[in-house]
Length: 502
Picture (cartoon, one colour):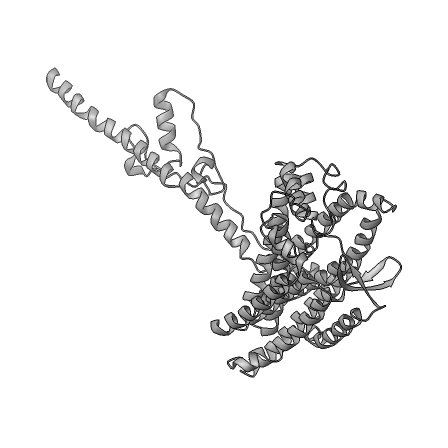
């Protein structure tokens, strides 16, 4: 064969050999991007490589050898041959993935249970700290030990915790059976308050009964709990008999009994507690499905009565005129409202520190009761007040969730009533401190000083915990957490995964 024919044959064979060498590399590169490395078959091997079973990383070996470098194996991850870089989702999908994970965690059966328990305990503990800080100067002014009010609040918190545990373990039937005795006992005590010599007045409101020594009782605080339990049982029984479609069965005897409690409270002059009791009544009617015209009629009557009571009392009118006030007034009638704003404004972002409040040194009246939120803002700053608001928001959401996910009408009415009570009272107290609402003289639930307010509130929180535990999914989740069951259910056979090499 001539020499030029031999050269032409060699030049024609070179592109084919190069194409054969490039094909395994492209095949391997696509295999790595698409998932696990793809092994090379004998048909795709170049002529220089002997036919037979090829290793999984033949393409990488050919490319490394052609480049003159050492042979490297791709990193093996949990996916079998997928490297850590390939297992990560795209950045655009990460927020969506985090959102889905948070939503699944939020929708778990025990979410409401943990929210009620955790937020209520955190509010109570933080309230004890703030009561000690806010009441030290007041106690020294009264020639008492600096920890006097704190010790009383701590005793009430211990007793309230016992009530919370008892209420959380009581069955629903026992709660319904307790409603009538609690209502009758509360009405009896509220009537005793109006008898001279038995009832005592504090800050112009006659709604206290002294129990001996430093202990006293405010029966109207227990009237809120009594109205919720009794009203929930009444509406549940009427719903079972399909009577709530008639307006007379929806209003009677719920509204007359509520007006009886309101009348006994207003005889003592406690306008703030009357507002909260009215909010509870409206909450029960709303949950019962009261028609709009009926709801608006009751609301209009209550608003008219409240306007008359405020208009005929000079003290209540002065409180109404102090909404949004920045001046103390000619006679200092807005002193408390303005100094509450001063306390919040001087706190800044992170506050002046625990115990470093200036307004509690005789400038702000009631620093450990009605205006404890202002002292918290001064000492803990905006971060502390927002934390308190977040805890109350979590507690309110958990109560709404418990009321919305149950099939038992009593549980729905009782949980909704408790949530309305705590939320409305927190809004009225914080709104008064911020200057957005008139000063009503109601404590901040679970936070302010006052054993008579703390005990029924913690019992009501125990009700929410009990109702959250009654959910079938929550029952199953709690049963899985028992030691004997958990060991059996958590043991799973895990198949031995391959090392990733083929």
